Each structure stands twice: as structure tokens, then as C-alpha cells.
Image (cartoon, rainbow, N blue to C red; front, side):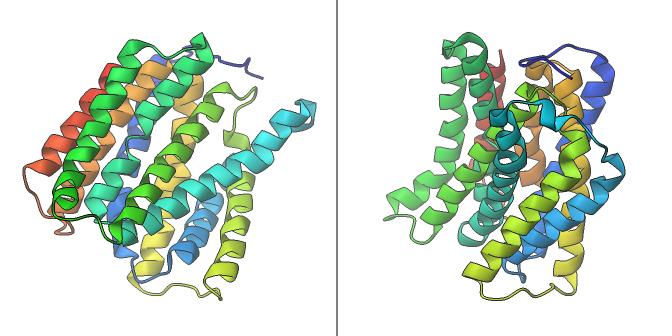
Length: 292
């Protein structure tokens, strides 16, 4: 049982290694999502979450959830699955409606949002460094969107950018709950992912009309997304948050946008111009500033 707001450093190197594993796997997520573009977003979400639940099944064990307050039980069993579903589905849909690199970069502003949430819950106010860092990070995202705004609007990509930002908010809230919850989420993760998968399946039936198992590259990419970025990475991130210091662990996540953008360019999914690396650096600098 962990007290609320606990950030006791039990094993600094263990938490750093766990965070780096999560960062590397998250960096591959945009490329895998692009490879699975033939599958509908909500069906891909359901497949990914099911694969993630199966990947984390060996870690499942009974924990005294019933000893928690009613509010925390509701947060764990309903809030966390809804955040996971919201983050993954918004991310997948956002990448279909907007350019992949830009949508991914907006989503990966979530570490600065996580830092702001942690500061607010810890001190009851936002520190100036956090606010300045957030402004710098979001100026990086704005740099990517400026040419479209100047040329007459975003068109259909606007919804994609909004959904990418929604995914960032969901991941920030998920990380904050993982840090502040009075018990570790890792033993519950397989069941939480299954609940999120059930939500995704229901949403797919309601909004897409049917459930079809993806085939070919989409099937392999969906399974890989579940095993890596939304399976092993989530376990590693939860361990890093529970055992490490939030500011150190959070700072490691700032490398995700650069690595993700580099992989998309290397794979030929995105075109490299001066705005993409500059925007990625602004996001990283802003997150580092907020983390201080």
C-alpha cells in the first residue's frame, strides 16, 4: 500500500531503466499505428487493448481494492479504463484525420501536462516554471500548425489535432492517477485493459457497425502495439512512477517526440523539414523547463 503523493525513491536505477523502456516502446507507437491504417480506429483500439491485457496477464494478482474508499474504487475500475480507452482511441483517430507526425507531437505534450497536474496536486498552485514550460512546449506544436493556419485553415485536420490533444490530456491524467493512487496499478493492469477493451468494442459496435478482425500488416501492427507501447511500456511506466522521483522519470519521457518523429521520417511516413525538428525541440525544452 502506497500513501497518496508518494514518490519515495526505492531504486533510482531501476526506475530510470523502466522509464527508458517505456520511452523506447512509446516512440515506436506512431509508426505501428500508421502501419495499421487499414483497420478502423476503434477496432484497432480494441485489438490493441486486448493484446496489452494478454501481455500483462502474468503480472496480475489479487490486491485489496475493496479496502479503498468508494471514490478510489470508482477511479480505479472506471476512471482508469476510460482514460486508457480515451487516450488510445483519440490517438488512433487523430492520426487518421491529421498528419501523423504533427498529431503524434501534439499527443506527446502530455508530460508537461503531467508535471502541471503534479505541481497543482502537491502545492495547490502552478509554479511559474511550469507555466512557462507549458507555453514553450505548446509553441512547438503551434509551429507545426502555423503554415496551415496562414493558408486558410486546417480543414478536416482540425478534429485530428483536437483528438491528439485529448489523448495527451488522458495520458497526463492516467500518469497522475498512477502516481497518486493508494495502491500500485500494475497488478490490476490486465483487468483494467480488459475493461477498456470492452468499452472500445462497445464503441466500435455503436459507431462503426461491426467488429472485424484486422488482417495482414494491420493485425501484426495492432498486436505489436498491445504487446509493446500499451502493454510492457505501461507496466514499466507504472513501476518507474512508483519507485522513482516524478521529475526525473517525467523528464525521460521528453525524448519521445524526437524519437517518434525521427522514426516516422526514417520510415518515409513524414517528410522532414525545418519545422519538425524545431517543434520537437521546443516540446522537449518546454517539458524540461516545466519539470524544473
